[in-house]
Amino acid sequence: MDSKSTQDRVLPFEERYRADVIALWEKCGLTRPWNDPDKDIDRKQTDENGAFFVLLRGDRLIGSVMAGYDGHRGSINYLSVDPECQTVGLGKMLMSRCEAFLIAQGCPKINLMVRQDNDKVLRFYEQLGYAEESAVSLGKRLIPDI
Image: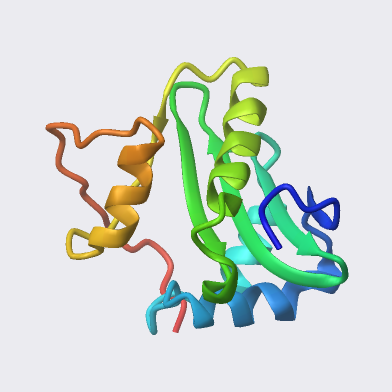
């Protein structure tokens, strides 16, 4: 089945998808011991300027993505497509939904982070027109998840 399947639907996240989303993130290698995915979902639910989308094929959850907007830049997190369904345009479909959402918010630019050794994902974003910028990502943990 290709990405144009009439059964593929992008919908807003609902609580009933939580366990499937977390299982998908684990299957895609997105979870880390220092980040609690349940807490990340809880935090996203309080984000009034962002969106959290899921991708369904029939009744099966096969993708998800979070988009954020801080008034200056947009961000993308937890983009995931079930490995069994990758390479047919579903990630591109989720990104298009996020970009349309962010444009509607007045967002002029998206910043996103990819781990340096994740060549497959870097190539995916490059094919969508994203490019490495000369900036350093800094972080500081304010609230421990574990």
